[in-house]
Length: 448
Image (cartoon, rainbow, N blue to C red; front, side, top):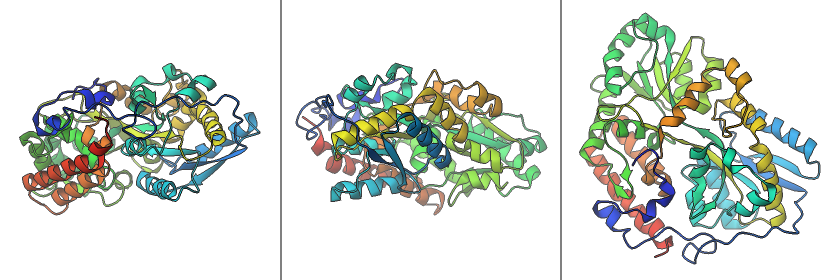
């Protein structure tokens, strides 16, 4: 999939292979009502008064609780008639999603604004759990054209806007500058994983670290960061809707990852958070979210380097996925709560608050007009993340549009990287699972 492909149009695209053929009679899902009932209509908020109080559910991505509280306090000063209660609804994206789904099923206790990750928002759309925010954007004069296009467009579907970007990230390559210097290596990220494989023995010998590289924790990360390995070798989880995780190129990429752990033995697999392992000096390099940047810089006792993700034998650029989370408004709350939530959503994503959030976490500044001068003066590494945004690639459909696919990818990665399972057999099994998810959970909800 080309980097600039508008993936929101994926269901109208013709592809090759059995996976694409299965979709040849389908257009995009309808919006609003049921997923097969027709296009969504704008919600009319004329004459609606914002609710006096709302709940905002967050998992505080990038340890952002303090900055979230600070922005809420500023909001209360400007909008004293709307009280926002910050609720810790989970420790990560999966936990907040599960709690939101439980509240949806119970039809009670719903928030008015919720953090939704890249792998969850589309199923909320399919299940009619969130509303299109276009009429609110117009009524409140939200400057959509000032958002970074690639980030705001991730939440566009069938001509509607379903969320706004919040804690948006890419993976970064983090490396220990002191270890690299001791090994006589250049002060930069490797251009390819093949180049790093040549560096790894020198790092292990000179650094004293347990590993030259630490693979990110598989739960929540594998499906995301392994796209980098796959794309560099010409592989992918999917191409449009053809599942390609078992292709020769994909298998070769994942075999190389397994070899780094077992055959060549220069890499480990983090059990919880590779950023913490890296900060503690356990490994000389790792991949982690831009949202980990500030935490790493605060906790590391060595000089930290950051760079673009390495490429592979088939592609050296365009191998970095976007990721992270947005903010959406549930459909199961009152119009008054929805309007209050949108008022806070607009404030939360204003340029000044975007810059403050980025400064506190390392996440992308989502507004192009955000003044990052002071932030970059203090943390110049953030510029690497912003620069890499220009060469990112939309994630594979199989990861972000198939409900539960990310967890299945993590299970398969665990079999390969922690159990030394057969790569081809594991990917063949994963392909069948992913195709089953599409047939059972997505296809029935798409309009013909």
